[in-house]
Length: 210
Image (cartoon, rainbow, N blue to C red; front, side):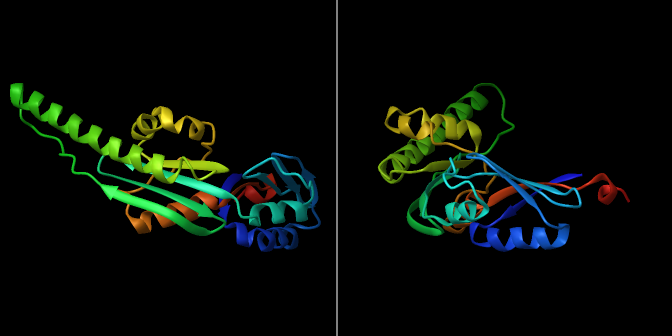
């Protein structure tokens, strides 16, 4: 059985110790991009190295690496709102959230429906333009190590098409975050989710069986 758990960077060392205690003496296969921990009972934990590559290829090197003050950018965009933030380590150092009114759907038909659709598209375009300007101001000059996005995929694609954000496109990394309309608390929680270390756990078949 395989499952994925998320662990805050500050808890990774303690989590690894607990994994070793529960499953027996482990062996570490440490690479620049991925770390595999195999235990005596057959349990395996695979960790994708965030902000790779990992330079010191040891367990201790992995822990030190995830605790370093990496600069993580966060861009959340939905039709009705947007948020951008810069996290250094676990601290939010710069951010901006905003909202734009975009009308909902209508049951009207004919010309009324077409006018409504045009108005709604214009409102969405204005919202995306506002999100783009915030990204240019907050994220573009921040010298980021990585960028995590969330909200609506089409909206994110539209914002990142701006030529001023060209350098950010190559910094985008998983996960893509599903979020509500971005308010400040939503942005802060999304930052914690984006920083979390994702660990794929595989239990031996004997443990996975009922």
